[in-house]
Image (cartoon, rainbow, N blue to C red; front, side, top):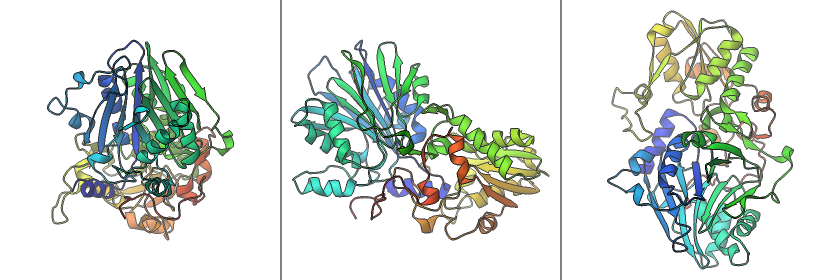
Length: 485
């Protein structure tokens, strides 16, 4: 039932979902790292609320001994004193993971980190992204006798690293050889008995950065996790780079898989929606990107109004940017219930409670009698936009003009973002005017596609979900469900 409820809830709220957040740390002074990983995952909770886990090892202890714990739910629900004594998870090197599934079912077996024992020892892996060739690689491995315990593509990566390690001098060399096989989006952290390794796919779809706190080094998805634990940002891992962290060598870099800058393809939705606004990715501030998107909406799609409001949370920064550019007051029109998890009981159709109202309430004092510009980051299926517009009108708004800080979704995503099949997208086979009617707005405008690179300081991005032009050939079949089809 868990899987059904989680996915229904995401559909009901009509928001995109990220695949995962990863966090790894190696304390050269030998201090225990499990509690630091816990707080790091807490900062990355927005990247996945379905399951989480931590694996640690003592580099001075028995080689290959890994302590791990994982479960379904939020970080503070899984790591409770009743479930696990986190202080008893002794180890100076470790990895952690928060997950939302776009490939592989929602079960405890599919929670990460993945810990594997093989002839050369033990590896623990945490992965964010989607492989587009996972199914064919999995079949190839199965025909050579591989037995899989999960339905996630992380296990495919783990098998290839373990297999290549037999013919490689080092674990990082094995990671590089595995990268020659796998295609798609991956930010990967690998913990071997004496090394912490980070790898980012050559296109750079997903973020990955390095931090430092005293004599401990961290690899993680977002800079906000570094700030949460009091670490300083060192740098981003380059698209295609493999980084190996050891006390003897510090940070060692292999850039043999790196592409030219113009061939890279970061997921633009990291900036528009997924990442926390206080994070920086590849030198660009997420908050600044959203503010800029709002400014461009005000320049390209102006409308007379009395107040600009954002749909929490990712619509707020864009709304501030719009208000500043247009010279219209910015207001807080929605109160968000911060205590609602992603898996709260979904109201039945017969109930009067709306899942939207459980999460959001409109402030009558802010919008009553006013012409309102409402900024949101996206409209996916369109199943909640009409209710949010209706909420503002019930609160007394005279007009509601909707502005979206991304272009219309017209194509699915195969690289770790939960953009559904085309026929489920509200923009598929509908004009902007028709979508406007469906959601009950007085006007509707989207961010122009040519503005996307401008909001990320001209970094090279993937915009396949808007244009259908993907940086890699998409798979022939939909890889985003479970493998047990």
